[in-house]
Length: 161
Ligand SMILES: Nc1ncnc2c1ncn2[C@@H]1O[C@H](COP(=O)(O)OP(=O)(O)OP(=O)(O)O)[C@@H](O)[C@H]1O
Ligand SMILES: [Mg+2]
Image (spheres, rainbow, N blue to C red):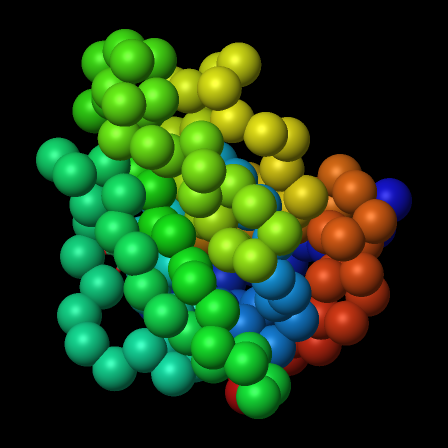
C-alpha cells in the first residue's frame, strides 16, 4: 500500500495539500485524520472542501459531531461528511444520529478523532497523521485499501506551489 510523507511549513502548505487531495477524492472514500489538538485536521478539511468548490464557512462540528457538505468531483455533486468525534460520549449518540448510514458508496467521510468511535467506524481507506513540529507540521498519508491506494497514486503535491 502506498504512503506519502511531507512537511508543511505553514498554513499555506496545509492549504496546498488540501487542494491536491481534493483532486484525488472519489465517492465512498473514508479518511481518518489523526493528530493532537491544533494539529490542523480542521484546517486540512477546510482546504479540501474549498478546493472542491464549497464556498461558505467550514467550522469544526464540535457539538453536532458532524457537518454535511456538497462538493463537486469532476462533473458530479457528491455528499461530503465532516466528523469531529472529540466530544462523542457514547456509541448510542453515534448510532441514534444515523451516522452509520453516512458511510456508503456515494458519500465521502472525513473523521477527526476517529479513536473516539473505535469499533463503530468502518476502516479508513486513507489515514492522515499530522505531527506538530517546532515550525510547521509533518504529515503522513497512509493508504489502507485499494481505494485509498488509488487516491495516493493520483496525488501530486508540491508544497511550494
Ligand atoms: N502547516 C502548518 N504550520 C503551522 N501552523 C499550521 C499549519 N497548518 C495549520 N496550522 C495552524 O494550526 C491550527 C490548526 O487548527 P485546527 O483547528 O485545524 O486543528 P485541529 O487539528 O482540527 O484541532 P482539534 O483537534 O482541536 O479539532 C490553526 O491555527 C492553523 O492556522
Ligand atoms: Mg478540528
